[in-house]
Length: 179
Image (spheres, rainbow, N blue to C red):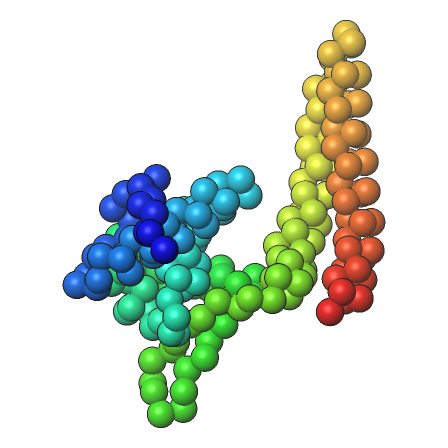
């Protein structure tokens, strides 16, 4: 089967590091795939790149491995791994004999979505509700129609937030049934 050349849309993000050219090209294509997908969700490029490089590796990678394969800072690797662990996108698979933490992708989409909902979305909706309540208290009190329009808009945001929060338990139940 002939190989297909894929030109990276994020060149320079994956470092060659003495690995075979086809391996680096595959890693670059995988990182590009996840970086492009993450842009839709507002996920930082470094987090998506870390997931892409871990996903592209047939063996678990250490912190140092990830850092040597990507052109991102150690701080970004550390923070990115923390985020990916938090949402269940990567898991630690270190052996007792090996002191280094090793990471591989967690391929269970249901678990990843469930953790995202629990750890990120639910918290954001809760904080958003509080912030919207505070925002409502700061509305201008003008006598013209502008104040009424702004009050209606803030009320609409509060309604959306309430509906989204009410939907979360249904989504959680659906995810549990799917497992």
